[in-house]
Length: 259
Image (cartoon, rainbow, N blue to C red; front, side, top):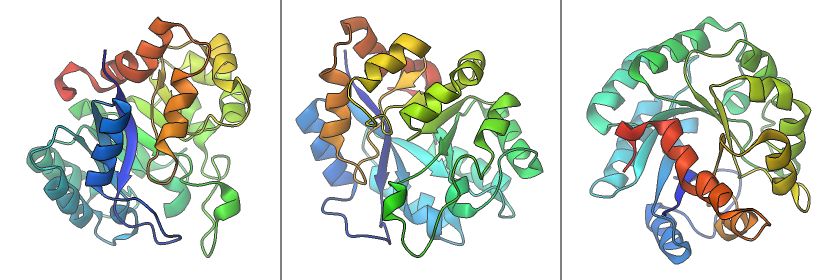
């Protein structure tokens, strides 16, 4: 069985130098570690005043590759619904990713977020919510909103129309809100933020099961090998590892959106 990386990033990161970057570096790292393909988003789109320009960049990078395109959207900008339609038609996107911490808006009781979820539900596309991109101790110049500040947990209580993947959420955040998250049948979460403590992944699986956890590296902001070893070198059964690395991502995306 293969492996899918649901959280990899191309583009420029303006706050620090990246030793490795770009789709070629991602592909090489995936080949070294036996990962079949990844779901890639463009960090440039976070900072462009027209995020769709970043999607054209990403589509050109991914042309001829088996990697899937994750579109970046800021629902507080006008025309985001039209942008999704364009990207869906031209770039065959598999998901839409948002960054409420960086774009400084709340998820709950937000008519624009509600409109976004309605569009994604209609198109059967999942919403990827980036809870953070780096350790808060590395924040410099700009301080992103925390999950509490952008209303993540209030948003989850509403059970959004579309499926949602929580990216880089931490172990203690999942465990603190496990009843709420586990009760919401549309919520998945990735592994990129789960390096809080030894045996944390085993604890998480024992408390919350394994059917909503997908592998995500957040490479190149995080070390890909360390996030992968977290899954492969813990005391998890073979079926659990297969779920995290492959099956759950297939279920999240739907068969029509996977390879």
